[in-house]
Length: 458
Image (cartoon, rainbow, N blue to C red; front, side, top):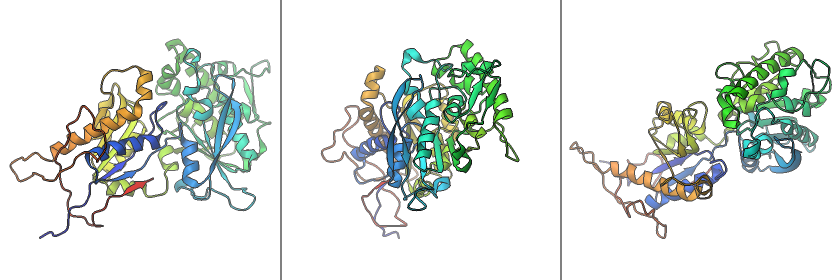
């Protein structure tokens, strides 16, 4: 006979951020608030995830005791903007960043994080100026140089949320390379100009790069060229017309031909800059950095926090993930799909929440998502959705968990019924769209610890 008292429900909360509305940390906290309204005794384990895009530098600086450094740099439209990079502290995360931090008083081995979205992201391109043939990654190279000036000799570049499609040409220019046309003239910024590229003069590249480990956290599903090349897949999202998409595809094909000939030298087995995993990251920035010796790494491996993320997912009774949108691209390296795959390896059920549900979202079920739903209670204007993102996410979480727990009360006639009571947290506001209380399952006897109410922040 089992004499152990029931333990609290364990829920792992592993969202990405909602671009323009919530950081990953804020999204995790909003979800946790919704969970507490229904299951105040639940143990919620917050595991906010960055994917290399917005918020990556800040998140890694906070996780390691590091700091952000403000820099004035060239934005994606060519105008100077306020940007930043991070120098990581000594409490470094695991994986390829495990050796981050300072190796000595001089800090010669300090690790910097350059977040391309902070200097060349789509959110930095006004809607009326969204022309991916003209935007530039020059600011990325300027941030890399600033990190080198601070003594960093290990630099992680987070790729994501880009507003560019120049193959990293601007970044290379900022680092000292000269991009020349047939007459020997410097090319202007932007991917469109690469159709005129005749040769690259790499002699002026910053000499410190030779002694620097360059890591690139990217989506390995993104490639530079071909039918699934970055111009064709993401060009329309950045404002390109069908004609501009084909123009960009041809320009990037020209770029990689010259890049491989004039810059990519030395490696015994040179990377495939056209179709290699991650070469299309951030409008082709992956290919440009790979030509400089950058290691293109799956972002969820290089950005793992070193605190047993997968083990924490395995320990949960339910995993909740979230992102701004679920659609046909989600299974190609986005946070909800990656979380679901890892949770499913341990047989854990997964709920996904999203700001919008787009075409092809049903494919996430194949990645391990058991159920998904949008967070908007009704059609609303984009500005309102962004402004009220936390409220909508919290309410949607509450309603979703209530529906899940209703299912645990159903008696199938085979003795599978439950008892127990879960209600709103004292003082918590209940969603007007949800019932005021519900009964729910008592969890199996604990195998590790007695009942507890504990919030774990990752």
